[in-house]
Image (cartoon, rainbow, N blue to C red; front, side, top):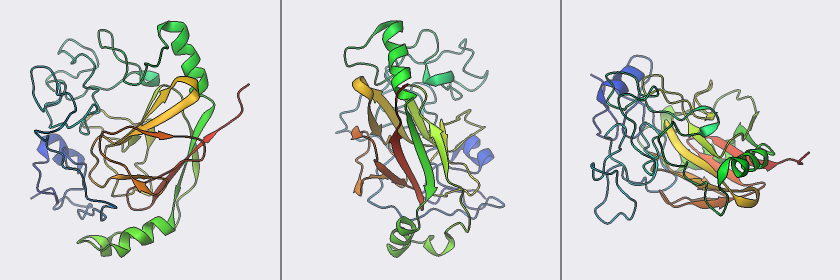
Length: 275
């Protein structure tokens, strides 16, 4: 019997995918998974909405995602990736597979929203219009994210203990790779075919870091070539330059910023020279 190690109802899509549809943890009882989830670097934020949360809830669905109905505590749904500031997708939207009730919503190429949706989160700051959007994309293209495995981070996570710590092994080989930051919204997480979620920085592996959620964090471009990072409430949290990130609170990140997530993953932001 498949089950979430955090006690959530994984849902039909989660069982089919092998991961909890609420928190992204690997399910137990699924052949080939083992239900591994590394210890959190800080107290994991609750995926359930809090009455005192200041984040806006979806219109008509207090505390629930406008696209898939999953509990949300901030702007981005950790389950399907929908931006709660945008208009909810309808059954006639080609980005929503028939019969899913909006559960397959994804952004188009380059992080753009579908027709009828509001402007992407993070496009403010005095820049508006098609020309300004093109300038922002040009600035974003100067940046890249370097993804690699960090043994020191892994050792710190394992030292904290946890029920699954003994089963999480550091990968014997993890190729270092660079991912261009093309667009104004860069999602970080794991590919989910059942949720139709394809993050721009895909950490599905191999090797796969079991502590990374489907939508773990989002990088948002700002004016003047700046970036901020938002963790929408990942199961195991995010650390930026050695400090845990509070869920749904934007954190500025710049050239050389070190982003740790999961059991061993390190993402370093680097800015190249503009041409």
